[in-house]
Length: 89
Image (cartoon, rainbow, N blue to C red):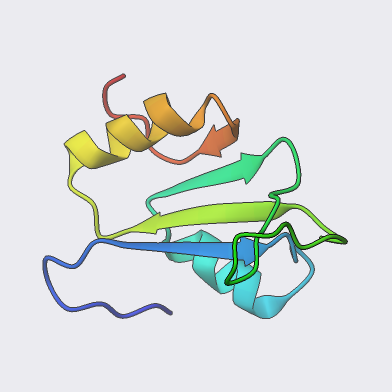
């Protein structure tokens, strides 16, 4: 289980490894999740694209107040499918 100091807002950008225990542990404690529609294109330290991202990515949100959770859903819906409590949109 993820443990954060009170009042800490955190994001975790991870590979889609839904078959792993760590992914399930994050999913069980996240306030909201975004499964990206497309693979994320990463860049190196010089800004050049890194080729060959072999899998999709998931963004987890932790420690957010209700207004931030709602904003996460509104914003991230443009990039993928969001899951988690939708308090207000």
